[in-house]
Amino acid sequence: MAEREQRGRGRRREEREETPEFAERLVAINRVSKTVKGGKRFGFAALVVVGDQRGRVGFGKGKAKEVPEAIRKATEQARRQLIRVPLREGRTLHHDMEGHHGAGRVVMRSAAEGTGIIAGGPMRAVFEMLGIKDVVAKSTGSQNPYNMIRATLDGLTKETSPRQIAARRGKKVADILPKRENAPAESSQVAEEA
Image (tube, rainbow, N blue to C red):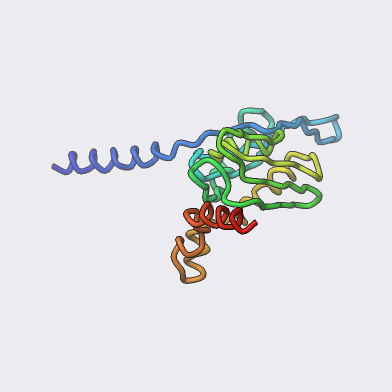
């Protein structure tokens, strides 16, 4: 009896550990050197973006003597630093926003369905790991991948959904969103008046 219970608990724990499946993307890898008395010691620095492609994303950096170890360290750090971003229809951003970190500046805009990810290098990795399918983004500052990713995540943390705004104001979501039914009627009335 006790053996069955232990087996059951073990299975549940294994299932829980396997369920959060994260995709990872290696953004940059640098060879770094340290000058010592006998010459130079080389190591590697890795920058990794991790996400579940359903609204959670994080980045991490790791340094080690070997490339696989640096990537492993970066991935672990990225999983510890995940942030949740609300997505509209599970494919794009709710509103346009800017983000910055140091000299890195990025502008992100929501896009119509079918637009795709229009963004460069490190920003594209963040959007793909986040699960965004339609977005237009531009980096207008530093081209350093570390600063670009931090600036992108800075902008994404400012993202708010209509549900969050409604809760903050103490209203319903329907009261906040523009009414689409009246829009065609109003445009026809304006046309008649002209």
